[in-house]
Image (cartoon, rainbow, N blue to C red; front, side):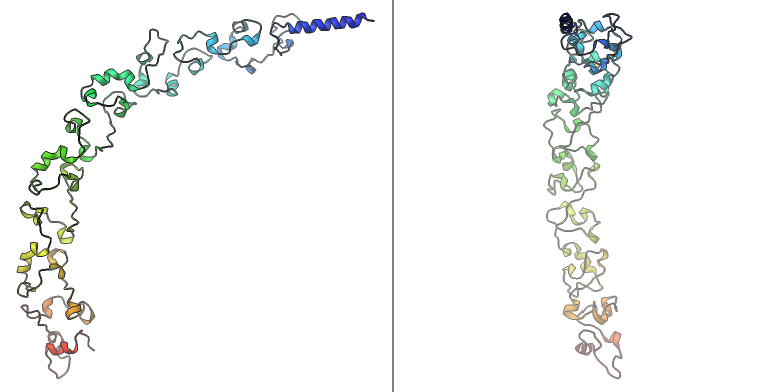
Length: 403
C-alpha cells in the first residue's frame, strides 16, 4: 500500500523538475500544446496556434515568411531582438538614426516616399530641392551614408553667396539667411524678393533696380529720406522753383510716391483752397516764384476786381476792402451778401423784403451814393392822396413791416 503514494510522488517531482528545465526559459507561460503534439517535440504545424502578433514584434511583410530560428537563435524566445538594428546591419552608419521604420517597411528595403519623409524632417524639400539627387546634399564616401551638411541655406550655398557680384553679397554685408531674399520654393536664384518693409517699394519705387538707390553697392548706407536720392530733381524743378522759394527738402510734405511726383498736394490749411480758390495753379497766387511772403488778405490779390466793379461801384462808394464782409470764395464773387445790412440798416434778407429784390440798385437807385435808398419806386400810392418821401416811409416803417 505504501509503494503507490511513493510512485505518484516520484512522478510529480520528476514532472515539476522537467518544467523548471524548459528550453524556452523559466518565464515561458505558453502551453506546450500550442506548438507541439504527442508525436514529438518537433513543431507540429497541424496544431500550431500561437499568435505572434500579440508579442512586441508582430510578424508582417517579410517577417511573416522567415524561419523562426532566424530570429530566435536560442529556444529562449525572450532573448530574441526587437529593434531593427539589432538584427539588420545599419548600412547608413547611424547617419539616419536607429529607427529603420522611418524610411523602410517590413515589405521591402526600397524607399518610395523620400519627399514625404523629408517633409517631416527639419528640412522639407521644396522647389529645386525637391528634384535634387540625394547625393547633391548628402555627400559622403558611400551612397548610403546620409550625413547632414546642415539645415541652413549657407551650409550648402556659401559658394553661391561669396561668388555673387550683382549685387555683391559679401561687400554689401547681406544676411547669410538666403530665404530673406530668395524663395525656398523657387527653382532658381532670380526673382529675389527681399523683405523691404522698413522702406516699402511701392508706386514710383516699385519698378526700380536696386542699384538706382544703392549707388555705392554698400547696401547698408542708403538713406531713407527723399532728398538724399532726389536732390537733383529738387534743384532742377522750376514750376515752382523749389530752391528760390526755399521749399523744405522733406518731399513728403507735398508729394506721395506716385511716378512723376504728380499730383502734388501741399497742406494749405493756413489758407484753405475752397470753391473759387480750389482750381487755380500755384503761380496764380504765388507770382514771381515767391512762396514765402504771399499775402493772405483778399484785396492783395483782388484789387483789380474791386476797382473795376461798377454794380455797385466799390471804389466810388468807398466799400470796405475786406471782401469777406460781402463775399465768400464762390467763383465770380456771386452771390454777394452784406451780412450787416439787416442788423445795422434795413432787413432785406429777412422780413417782408426777403426775396423781393435781385440787385442792390433796385433800392439804391443812385449807384454813387448808397446812403440814398428808394421806397416809393416800389411802393408808390401806398397811402391814397398822400405824397411821401423815402425818408418819411423809413421813419414810420424802419423794419419794412406794413404795420
